Image (cartoon, rainbow, N blue to C red; front, top):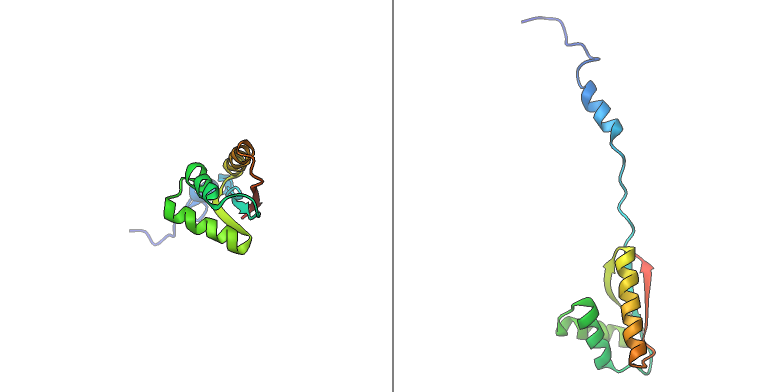
Length: 109
């Protein structure tokens, strides 16, 4: 056994180099997909949209629809940019096909 301390330059040198080489990854921003209330789109249509586009169970879809109806808007889900954008386009396309003025937007979470 030696009384000489280990060479501090060698101890942990590899760990330090690895830490410096790691890029700091930032999570991409998430976006809320939001339905906006209007006075013309039937409540049942909104529930169907929430079930078909967002995969919600009937009970949850009804809760979100009531939130849209009573509070003016409701969050359908939170996604990365591309998925949120696709969901908004799907909702708007289906609403337009059925001639409903339902508005769907996305906002950074």
